[in-house]
Image 1 (cartoon, one colour):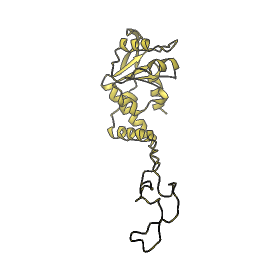
Image 2 (cartoon, rainbow, N blue to C red; image 1 turned 180 degrees about the horizontal axis):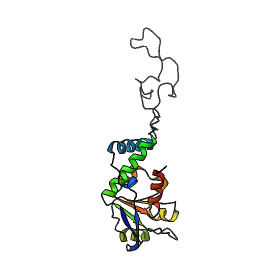
Image 3 (spheres, rainbow, N blue to C red; image 1 turned 120 degrees about the vertical axis):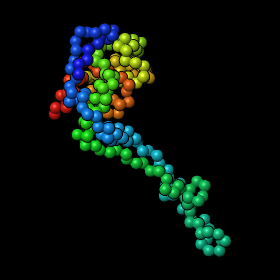
Image 4 (cartoon, one colour; image 1 turned 90 degrees about the horizontal axis):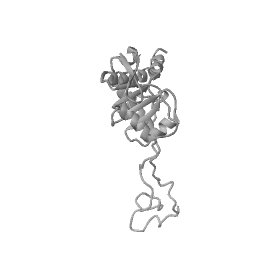
Length: 209
């Protein structure tokens, strides 16, 4: 599959790039995509919810009343869950949600997601560019010129660029990542995928390893 390389003003640079069929034209595997997205979202969870049980409550351990003859139940401590301010029974505790996924499954999921975007003609290849300073207005003008859309646009850079990242940070529908950070969730969550020229070669090279 061949795509033209656009300049930042939206015009054709005259260059075309070849998207490797082994990465951008595979038979998509929906289940692999599902597994990878579920794993990614689970790994974002922190699981910090916590309540105190009766052993952690700051109350006296003195017995409230005598064992017999009080006319009621035999209470041993104010820390009991039946008292206001007592410990909670079976409350949430910090939990580890991290899970693992086979590397080959993750690679298949990533290629499947990229193939979906290629089939939908949602990939734009943009020539490399730099920004001298963080300018949101200038970045927005580039996005408009290349007709990337105004709903969930993902820019993939070959390497980190602080000025480009800072320029896009205040635009709610734009996300900028490097090729090292690309993942199935980000690809599937985007409506348009903007690859800076050279990223497609990195993705193809990784597929051959």
